[in-house]
Image 1: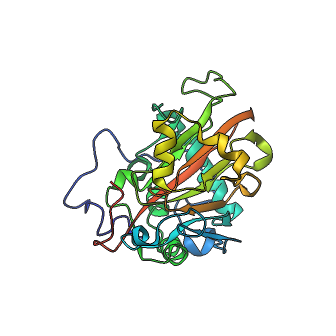
Image 2: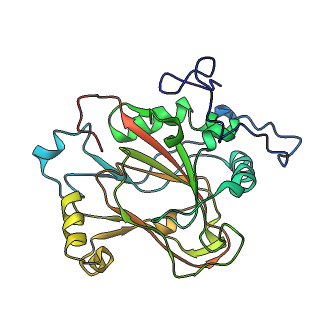
Length: 278
């Protein structure tokens, strides 16, 4: 596998940040090689539904013409098989010692494309890139900033120092992303936690902003069937792709369980003339 690409610094020219050194996970099974092998670990499938910005999120067709694609989001689809997920889970667990809190996310781990060769190779899979490009209806590239290409959102019930946190804390509050497209890969068995449902707001970006500006709660739109919940399909090894910069989304609180981890990949459209997310 290629360890760098045209959107990443060439390691022979630019060194990695000293604060994010490459590290070997000593806990990997001796019979498994911590190298991401597409043919061995991927099991890419099609989602049941693809939602578009005009029909499902009520966007103006003239506005959508300024974007790279009309694509909005998908329902869950298979991405990685159980063997691959076992290795990925081992990497997540080992590198969890670097997780931090942010104002929006109680527990997040960034910079793993620098720390873990397995994560870096996963974040450059050409098979995944081709699959998400087909689903999005436009050519995508991995985010040009290496640190943005992949991160892990972790279960908030176990804090950074191991202390239990509030079971009513939302994992990820309503927001739109600063990156164009994201693939959210579910890394925990669905029976290991309750709650933690990824939800879309079936409205425009401006509608979401209007609710926030009026101090309204998007979740109350459930009565109008404007909240699309993907909870039942959040199986281990499955993922959802969305144009996260255009679609408001959140993850509800985990009400019980000790594990709810996701790996989030970030992409940008190859079309440099399309309206940028930032």
